[in-house]
Image (tube, rainbow, N blue to C red; front, side, top):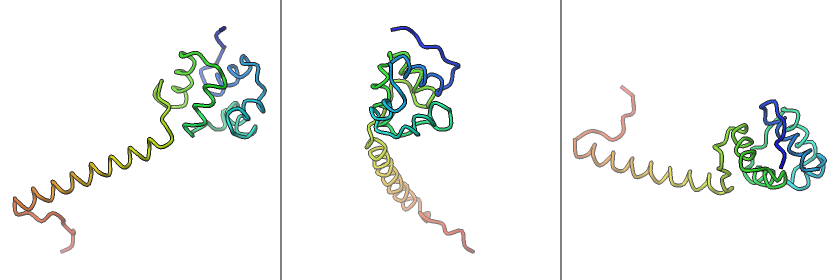
Length: 124
């Protein structure tokens, strides 16, 4: 696979990978499940894809090498090699909530043992 030329932007890399894959914008849009206008926005640098599922489909449709995938993800502001599952954000939020609930419970227990009020209203 021949490396693609780019100016270091997501838009440029995407457009050149699409051309190398022999795809028209409309074909890439269909493969990824977005509108042709969305692909056009991405290639002009007006927007970037944000949906993890769309990003995953984009990487597959472009038949990008591991290095190109890492560069695309980097240019999107995502850690290379990480395309989270759609429900992973929900799982993370749930886990954080559980952790915060446990921390609040333990903080309240410590404050009770020390004779401090666990909540201060800030009112005088």
